[in-house]
Image 1: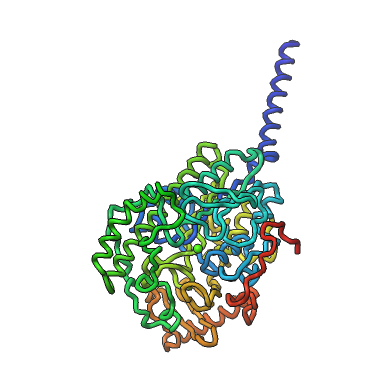
Image 2 (image 1 turned 45 degrees about the vertical axis):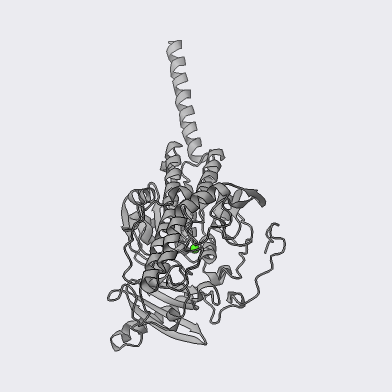
Length: 526
Ligand code: CA
């Protein structure tokens, strides 16, 4: 009798302990608060991702996120250029409110509220590893190790919590190694945010030396608009400086080697490029043949970079699986904007045209996102902050300008989801001579305004009849109604988003760069 009683009591205590442990896992160790891995690349075109139907390259690891999560087919950026896009993501605000307008003189005000700061305050461990590109030091991270400026492709110096350290090897691999090292040493009892941000595949698109020759000297399929003459569009499109035909530099073409290679690395580089370059010099190509050669060289190099990015994504996903983190970790894959892979004869970005306005976005969100779905709603990089705060159960500040993608990921897009989107590009003068413009995009149309006094004109594109955006129909009789509606919508969006009538002085890239006093010191409180 006594024994039975004791045994029952022991069983009860054991059951209680198990319950307590489970409760602890939920409340103490945040089983319900998901971890977040934000994998971010610089200039990765959706045209170079298998899951988006690329004919150029295979990306089996990035594609894993599409098959286990959501592929977004219309993720639009508010300002298609590196630094400004990063500032938008961190703050959930357009450039005119976060103050980082262009790469030429922008300096991120790190005292602003950002989503990593809010996650950190809510008990997340936060880390930022790789390309930062916002001039001031990162804030809101327990750990950071970032490339200075654009960073190098090989043997990069980095700043680890403000201290300069040197690495040897290929930067995409190094950023991945550092990210995995951080994941392995973190406190397993707390949820985490890891921002793993690559330099690749930014210009000059330098591949890992092990991938030189990865394509077996393949001749790539040319985009239909490779030899675009810009007829049907305005002066800004004619006067840009980002063509393969006229603005492709020796470093872009790998006719010169990067200075940072070690002698051993240089040998590998030369063994691949030198015989091909010698053949190119002998051929003395001109006109279209020269453009074609450049396009193929560009594709070899750019897609070689993508191979390493894909490998990196695979290593991170494998680690999450092995560590038992897969079920409770949101993985986001995105780039800072889209990019031209020869469309319109271009490389680079900046325009409100589709290839640079649209960025890849894949989200694996266990328990929320339906695996293998494709979403065509207009979503944006201005939504990322609110989405990730929502995921963590942290209330987003009212002045953020996006919206959480949670219902969209779940396949339940709210009926009042945005049907139009505001875009604004500021960096002129600047590299590649793309003029300032703003505009509104809808599912079917784009209305753009190039608004500088010396280059003031409007354009309207009908994506249904002209998906490549070759001919402006602005002012055409059959578009009178659509145009009037878009003009009205543009005005409404500018008001709603608090866009000033006149650009602020610091939006002008001719303004003197903001002072860089005490660049390693703590950010001043506002
Ligand atoms: Ca970029």
